[in-house]
Image (cartoon, rainbow, N blue to C red; front, side):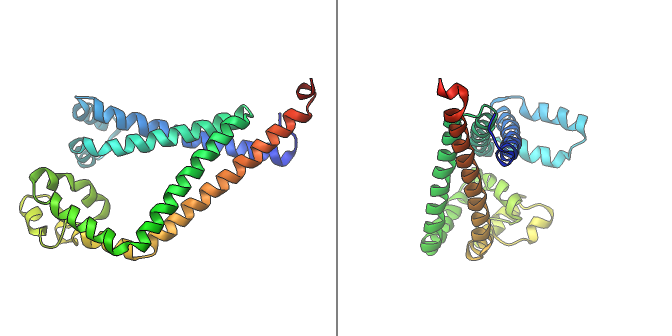
Length: 233
């Protein structure tokens, strides 16, 4: 066991945080994978919804857009791996696992910094690309249907202002969504605001703290091994 009350408390907090992250990643990965691979997903989900009294409309939206859940599979797998490395690294006092944990977070942080840099230095080009992608998606019926998860998440209607009426006529903007702005306008407003920057800075700060904690614990574990009676044999 690592010496020092501070190191022991840090180890416990680090373990609990990563164990929670691991469990969340497992649930997200398992549910998303099941949703994509199970041919009877819709029927099984309706049965589950009846037992747990979930909102049936929400269940229908998930069942209709199974393909979009592949993104959640990747996110769940990433959270699972990161949580596993951090959790086992702290529990087993393994400097190797904690080093891998820190390396993955470092790579993710660099990728996020690059995306942020490109987003804010090439904001005009980015919005032009998004506008073209939205226009292309509105040309086919499948493309228009595949936009619905984005509409629900952003509370918007239609790809662009010029194609919004097509979405309304096909019933793809039900209820209050019919009065909402076009999705491109919402995306452009969010990119132009500082909300994305603030959220990204918070995420990077959390990742930086996690890397510092993993580095501190890794050094403590190495020092304990070197100076313990077992390490001297």
